[in-house]
Length: 108
Image (cartoon, rainbow, N blue to C red; front, side, top):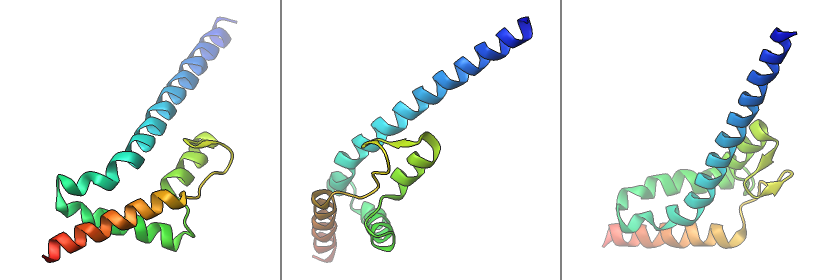
């Protein structure tokens, strides 16, 4: 009986840690979604990361790979319950615009 109780307690802690990890990853993803497009102001070499992100969206039908990984592990995304993988159009345009500005600045 004690072994069962001990196992249940360990499972509860595991679930708790999974929720903590999930919340940290979701918050970092949300924060990154709003900060990353403007990192070129601090370091222009971020343009290569922008290119990788934009290409991953194009090759994956405007779906976010990181969001798909979140769904795989947590059965939800930082955007909410369900399969919400599509990158919103306004966020794509913000990234495209910042990418182009960064490229123009590098060329000039």
